[in-house]
Image (tube, rainbow over all chains, first blue to last red; front, side, top):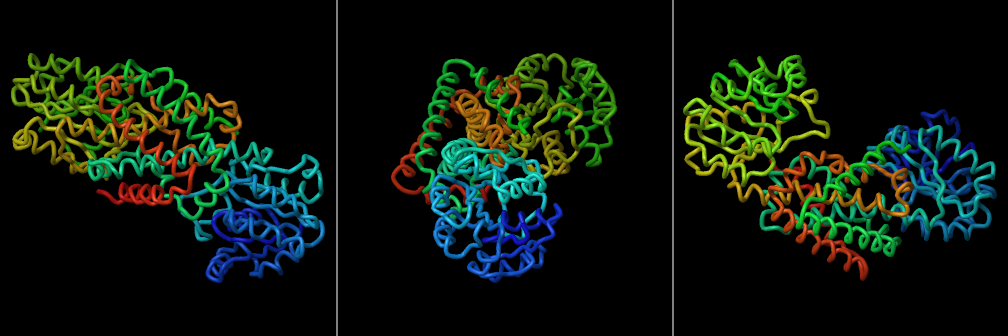
Length: 280
Length: 280
């Protein structure tokens, strides 16, 4: 892998460039983004040079699609006419079923869906960080197990390990169900909580009385709609399912509270919260 | 105010002692706690000397009840026989209706309910921090406005300001409704989320795929049951009401998602999350 092209040099794309270099990548990193972003990415050292999409696709051994889901879905069908034969195409989109279906259509390149479970409140290449992926799961959703046995895929997975992330394999369907539970459901709850509180008669006092717990629980509500629009559109069924599962549990908790004390729910919740923190 | 007695020298009580001293308090700080905690509190410099509850009550100009709600409710009725006439009794309990009703029964001392909106994941005097209250609201729930006009109350409020906290006045009823929304509802959602996910077939994979968002949203689920048992028991009606309000909003969000996109909810949620962060 000598040339990497990052398409969409934001927080994730920029961090991937920085992380590769910190991990010892000595090849060339091309960046495809807006003029303003390219200038910032060059200044940060996240990329070595700017390129147009077609030029980048033609030169890259690894094409890393790090833009929004909608952009990734638009770009994949154009790649067969552009890529080097045998190149590896991957992405960092937050849902995988539609993207991997599109990726399976590629003939001249291998597509390997990916999703680094890393982020920050603030976006943009200005926030990029070579350490962003360290200790974080990096979900990979190959269409077939043998896809991972190609030299290009093996090398990419090796770089994922070198930047400190932990590769994990899932089918695109498993991925979308898992992230509906682990990421989209928490987002919906944070948004619903903040939105519900904003509609209360006591909203102003609640905002002024907010402690660290409410800060934690409303941090995701700050997420941008542009990102979430794509996620909700491409994973609606699984998110609705996750919401229904949660509603049932919340109703049970409320009923327990009305008639007694939900000690068992607290014990189970605490145990799972610890499990998350000990998993790795 | 020359002698302060802190009853229950844990995270909050210990931090109050440290904060007072850092803010220039030159009087004596007595601590009432278990032997082990007292040793740690003395080592940290959070208190100047250990005292029994009766001795502390007899000597203190300010009696700061920082133990669990249940302990505060047990101690208040004993105070009339013990306190210096004209002493100020305050507390740091997380619900205020029952505590302030008990406090109104005091004849020889003035009771002023309080609730610093500050905390940490870990408890105990080992975690105490002179900066814990800085920039945080400190809710006060006087039974009558004139309670705040006594010299002892004025001096206490002045120390709250000196330790960097922001005093805010509420009735006990307003307080319990506000914290049901700002603190107890978020806790219930975090517990319900973690508990619901722990019951999924995919629980193990979800735990291993957890990103920073799920970490944020399950941090409160780590809270100890011993604390929450008292809170739920003394604020059950308001918490159930807050849960019902939230359930309605979540159902609306789910319906919007099933048929379209909940852009307006995301916008409102983000706006409120920003409001929390800008309030002060």
